[in-house]
Image 1 (cartoon, protein in one colour):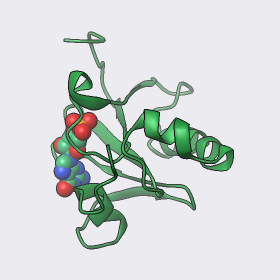
Image 2 (image 1 turned 60 degrees about the vertical axis):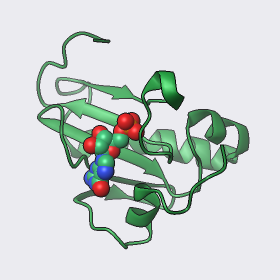
Image 3 (image 1 turned 180 degrees about the vertical axis):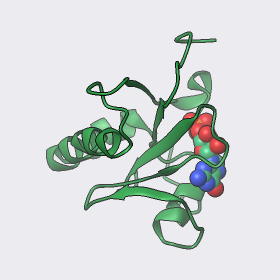
Image 4 (image 1 turned 90 degrees about the horizontal axis):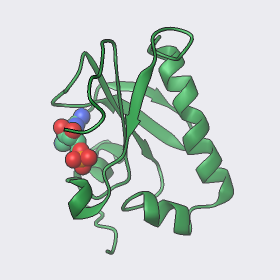
Length: 120
Ligand code: 5GP
């Protein structure tokens, strides 16, 4: 699937739509989900144009892949939900069976309470 430059997260990255920012560096932007499913529900997106995790792993540079994943620790530490506290869950939906709605790679980070069953 070709990257759609008009997807909602591309607009957030360009500053055309506001977000409640949690963290930003050269590689990622993290912000609160507009419709939180848990007490803490944050989305982490790469700054590059990648449709999903497959697209990212296929096309991103090693620097981008490392930068994106290392940012998770920074973000959960800032949110005080790392495993030094009570822990959290990371999830990424990919494609139609995965239930992906927004076609720009994102990790969901859930925390702040018990997350419950792995899959409903
Ligand atoms: P997906 O189903 O693609 O994995 O998740 C997309 C997520 O993006 C959903 O949890 C949804 O609530 C969130 N979302 C959709 N539009 C917006 C928006 O405009 N702002 C923010 N902050 N989150 C959004």
